[in-house]
Every structure is written in C-alpha cells, then in structure tokens.
Image 1: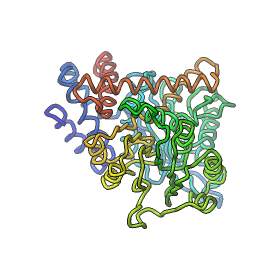
Image 2: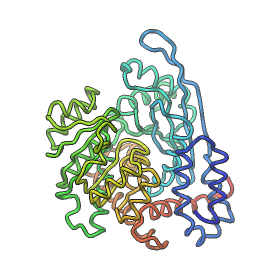
Image 3: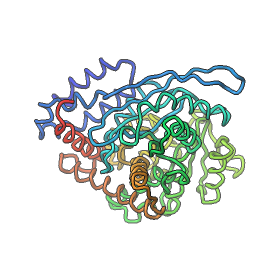
Image 4: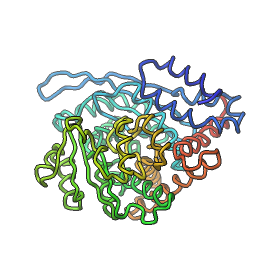
Length: 455
C-alpha cells in the first residue's frame, strides 16, 4: 500500500475485527490504487476511498422455517448493499454454513469493481444465509427460500437491488425465491437473475461464468504471445459445479485438455482429459443426481485423491504438467505451496473462476514469476455481465437468442481484458492484471461517487 491508503486499511481492520476475508479483499484493492490516487487528488480530498470501503447498508434478519419432520429451524439471513453509485446493487445470494458478515462483505466489495469493469450500470451487493441446502429435500429448500424471501422482499427491487445465485443457489433456489417474491408483491419484476428462460431468464446464463473465465484465460495467453491460446494446453480446473462444468466445456471447445475436477471431498485426475461424454456424466452427477465426484473416478477408472492424503498430490494444483489453471471452487483454495507447485509445472496463466480463490501470497508469487494472473473481479465477471444482460432483456420485455447473448458476453470479456491491459500500462505496471482490474473498476466508481456529492 502507500501513504494515502495505509491509514484507511488500518481503520478497516479496526472497524471490522475478525473478518479476515474482508481485510484481504480491501488490502488487495488498496495495494493497487495508490498510483491512481496520486494522479487524482480530488478523490483523496473527497475521501472517496474512506467511503468506498464502508458498505452503504447491511441488513441482517432471522429466517425461521419448518423441516420435513415438523421441527422449526432458525437461520440467519443477510443482504449487503455495498455501493450503488453506478446502478442498482447487483450480486449473488450464497447458501452455505460458512456465511457470515465478513465473507459477504468481501464478496460485495469485490462485486463493486467487477460490475464496474463490465461496463454495465450495476452497483455491488451480496447476500445469503448460513442455511445448508446439501442433504435437504426439495420441500425443505422451498420452505427455506419462501421464509428467506418473506424478509428479503422489503429490500430488493428491479431498480434497487437485483440478487442472483452463488454457492448453494442454483436454478431450483432462484425459482422458489422468485415465486415467493411474485406472490408477496403481486407484481412481475425482473428482481432476480439466473431465472429459467421460461420465466424471464437469459439464454446463455448457465454458461456465462465458466465461458467468461476461459475466454479471459485465452486472451491472456494470446497477449503474452501464445498464438494458439488454449489449443493443446493441459488445464486444471477445481470444483465441479456450474462454473467448472462450463469452463471445462469451453476449454475443450478451444482445444485444451482438462485433467482435474473436484468437490468438497476430493478430486479426480484424468490424464486423458474430460471430454464431451465425460462432461455429460459430470453434469448429470452434479446437477441431477447431486452425487460426489468420486463416482467419476469409479466409472472412468481414473485416479481419485482425498485432499492432503497423498504426500505429493495434495490438491489439483500439485498435479504435474499443468499449463493453465482455473480455480473455480471457492475463496482461498490456492495457497502459497500450491502456487509454487503450479509455477514449478510451468503454468502460463491462472484465471480465477471463483471469487478470490488464490491467497494474497499466491497472487504475489504468480506476478513475480511472470504467470499471467486474471483476478476474479475481471476473469469471472462473465456471470454478472450476463445477469446484467438478463436485466436489460427483462426491462425490454424481450429475449435475445443464445448466440446473441454469448456474442455480447464475449465482447464484454474482451473489453475487460483490454481495460486491464491498458490501465496497468498507464499506471506503471504493465502485464499486471490485478492493478489493471482494480484501478479500472475503481476509477469508474470513484468518478460516479464524486459526481453525486457526499452521500
């Protein structure tokens, strides 16, 4: 950081004790934007950064619901509306036992810059609950979602705050949430994105985050002089949910070979590559059967590892020969040791499919060793970009074809890559996508905040 941002970060840590994920996200941005602040003293004078690191609104509420045995369960619900300077608050809902204020603050803060980079008019927000949908029946998930929306509806609207899905919130949950909102409000508003096409969703939305992260990786490779991009490259992907599935599909379409997928119990290594037929199995396994990735290893007779049980291959990132990595599971899944293993493998590029999956020291190592590193706020912006396109279609009462949506998305991802490259060069850090993404997003939000006065 620097003389301008050091005291701001110290205040963030003091005010938000015991929230390490939020500290990490703020520090990563503040480390980058000092050159921009030096060139824009008006931002310093107006205390833009001091306001930017403080959420505009944090909403916490009780969510009581009844399980299949007739027992009342109580969870905690959240919505953090972090910054609305450039448009309605926009960001997902996460259902996971780990959810608490600190994780949602980090996600909402990241979302502010990610949304700004898309070029679409969207502010940043995030929400969710410590409810765990795993192991719950459809009826239990429905009753929870209805109870959650009975409070959340007061705080969202198509022109105010438009949530989407995240970990634990897929098409099933969005459907239940939207149905509850429509019933309570007695209106049809495009208040949630990630809806099915039958009731206002955008074609191409399921593919968006995985495709976007892959396109970003392809752009980084070509920018560093790898003419064929992903063609012929050995690619490691973590996770096996929506992002990982469609990243695998796009990598394969572009001629790359995906050799790893994972879930919370372990990971597979398929040196022959996860081809189209194998991916169809994964999609059925995870989206319909809701099974574990070990079943892939059992069916296709490939290696399966439990995390940290093998002395050498402790995680997907220790697999030898990885040329491109797309961490697509969850935050802080790639530590310094794993980053060193990727560097040793000769990894050329890392494109974050998840939100902040690489710890700060891992990011520093990638940049130091010349690995092209696409931070999540740039690389995985495809999901929220397509959510923005869904909002546009809802406002128009119109639906674009899948080809039209994905074409618009590809152009948005190309523009984000170009913004990162040119901004990093302009502010003295050529090739540093972290600096490019952070300053690029910051400048747009900061100018909007400055224009709107002290609010």
